[in-house]
Image (cartoon, rainbow, N blue to C red):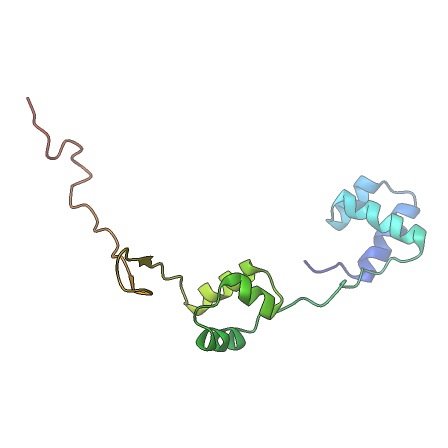
Length: 139
């Protein structure tokens, strides 16, 4: 959300100092009552200007992530989190945006070491949803 202009802040403070009420100022300038109180507190402290951003936001470069996936296809989210310095959720979201999905595989017991088989998804039922008694005996 963008901060309101200094001009508006100064007009709100001047309006209230001229004798108008805080609720009236909020209605007149179409801002919240809480904003009026914040502007008055800030003016009393001598710093009415909006606060600056507290830091630089991290961005996860999609090209670097895609290259890292190509170089390390078996890397976990936690490992990539340490490499890129962002949360594992940020990695997960960016992977989804890149169209890279989690492929679940299950180990075959008694099979070759390292062999895996991707299980097929269940087929949808062909039973009609309109007829809840489909396949049952009727009296």
